[in-house]
Structures are given as structure tokens and as C-alpha cells.
Length: 421
Ligand SMILES: Cc1ncc(COP(=O)(O)O)c(C=O)c1O
Image 1 (cartoon, rainbow, N blue to C red):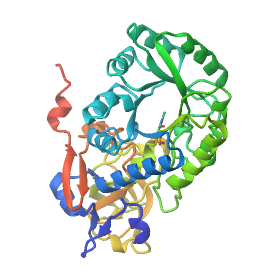
Image 2 (image 1 turned 90 degrees about the horizontal axis):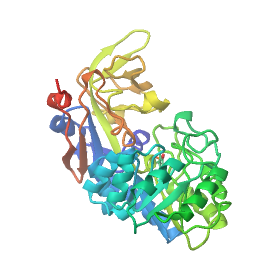
Image 3 (image 1 turned 180 degrees about the vertical axis):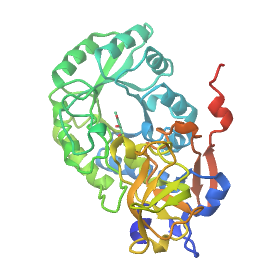
Image 4 (image 1 turned 90 degrees about the vertical axis):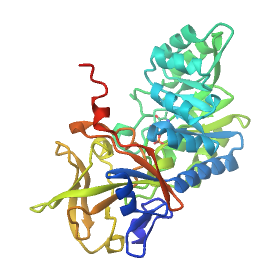
């Protein structure tokens, strides 16, 4: 049971009758109160992780800032927690700017990304005074020069493609040669020279990000040296990408070990007076949440399929990059492990690829039982969709035995709201 519990938000435990408790709240109470599926966030765990990142970075490089990569969980309430814990926010898209501002973040602590920023987004970044725009290409510079009013200058970083292929799924790799993100060093140098001549832009520094769900610290360290060859700047944003723990077998580096490697490389290659920014997303939020489903049907044959009331409408990570998750019967946590039968947990969508867990042992699953899938805090909320007319699922925060809804479930009216005929 300890192995299973270790995948749920820290502090999760079984109640006396064996029912899973997250943030001190029983899974059956959460399911009754908010319906299923429901994404449950342990607020205490979320805040603790934000502080861990902030303090561990400050201990190693005092002139530093953690900005949460909003894309991993761009829910206003989550962004608000990050802002309250003193973090900045990385936004990639106009919608993330909207929610970040609603969350109350200081716009000067917002870092704006995107490989194809539109006029609208650049306009919003400039209008709201976002702290840093990360230039990905020459068109970003054209747009910024056309948008920034005379007499003002927008601080920018240039995204450098370091040519590093980290070990992770190809779909979440970004720093390799041939990536659509950023500019190879020679092209970056040309654009930097242009920015330095521009009266509307202030060249503040460089950005690098090698990919996501990376379980080895080496690629992070290796990504720093290519920046040093481009000159000295006041700001270096070294991206995110640290892997999260999804399965019993995963052993992601601790935040401290990751930062030892990254900041070790920064000490070697970057000016000591520079400000260092990091942008963790997945590893900040994945383990702070779990999704509760209800079993709808069980089909026994060559394979036992346990089908739940959600699936790829609320978790696209499996279909997108084969991410493995684990699952457990919420009422019988203590029975997980050697007992039970091996099943495939599938969703209710019309795709054979709609699999949540391919091969997991569950103890006596029955129709109507609650199934808990841990580590669903990253990229599940944001990639939720309406496939098969499904209503996007709610988000509840649980802390100290109290739960509250922070995003409600979509309604049928929401589904019809955009129809104009
Ligand atoms: C520029 C940038 N920064 C940060 C992140 C966050 O990465 P992760 O969620 O893997 O920490 C991403 C996502 O891939 C990104 O593209």
C-alpha cells in the first residue's frame, strides 16, 4: 500500500475503513459532492511543491525566480496559488494571459512564450506590461516593433535551440536539432544583433528548454553551455522539463538534484551576476492531483476491460505520448498489490486508443465502484475536450479535510453555448 500511496499527493492516506483520503477528504465524499469524474487537487501538496522549488533555487542562486509553466495546469485557482507563493507565471497563449491576470499575478512576473505568437497575443503582452516576451523567431520581432508604443521598450529574451536530444517521448522533445521551437545559435546571434539595435525592444537575455518528462539531469546541464557562446546577458531562463512520477517504476530526480546539475552548469558558464529563471510545469503539479472515476461496466474475455465514466476527454496524456498511469480501487487501497486481477482500464470514448491504464492489478472491481488514478495534475485539465459530447470535468481543491470546487463541471448549456444557429 505504501508504494501505491506514494503516487498520490503527499499526505494521502486510507481512512479506517480503507477509503482513500486526499487532503484529508474521503474519496467517496468527494465523488458524492462533486460527481465523477473529478480532478482532485491537494492544495497543501501544491503549495509545498511551489515552496520547495522556490527555496531550493534561491538557496543555490539567490538572484533567481521560479515561474510556473501555466500550460501544465492553466486553471485560474492553480495560477493563483503559484502567485500567492511568490512565483511568476509562464504563459503560452492569450488564454493563459487572461487566466494569469485574473489569478492576480504581477504582470511584471509573467514570461510570454509561443512559437507562433499572433498579433492579438503580442498586443495583449504589450498592453498588460508582461515582464518578458520570449522571442522565438524574427516575426515576433516584427510584431513587437509594430506594437510597442514610441517611448517604451519591451524586455525580451531570445529562445535558443541548443541541439540537445533528451531521452523522452519525441512528442514532448523541444531542444533537438530540427525542433520547431527557438533558433539555432547562429540564427539567434543575428536576431540578437537586430534586437540590440531596436529602440522598441530591450535585449535582456536568453531562454532554453529541452523538453518534458525528462528523468535524467544531464540534458538540463548540457543545455547551458550553448548559451554562453552567445555573449553575456543579465537574464537566463533555463526552462522546465523535469519529469514527474507516474508509475511505481519512475524515479525522477529530486528538485534539489535537478537544480544541483542545472545551477552547477550555470556557475560554470553564466555570469555570476545574472538572474536565473526556471519554468517547471509537469513536475510542479502532476503529483498534487488525482482523478476519481466511477466504473461503468466490466467486460471479461481475453482481456478484462474496466470502463470508467471518463477517459481521453479528461486525460489525453496516454494517447498523446503513451504516458503510463497507475490506478487503484479508492475504497480498498490496502488490497492493491499482489491480490486482485489484471485489467485494462479504458474510457467511454469511441476510440480503441481511449485507454487510461494498459494492464494494472485491481482488487475485485465492480460496477459503481470508485477508481482513483494518481498523478493527473499535469496537462490533463488543459487538454480536456468535448469528444463524444462529453462535459469537461470539474476541479476540486482539498485541504485539511475541507474540499471546495474551483472549476465546475461543464453543463449541457455550455456545450450548446457557441451555437449561433
Ligand atoms: C518554454 C517552456 N517552458 C516550460 C515548459 C514546462 O515543461 P514541463 O511541464 O515539462 O516542466 C514547457 C513545456 O514543454 C515549455 O515549452
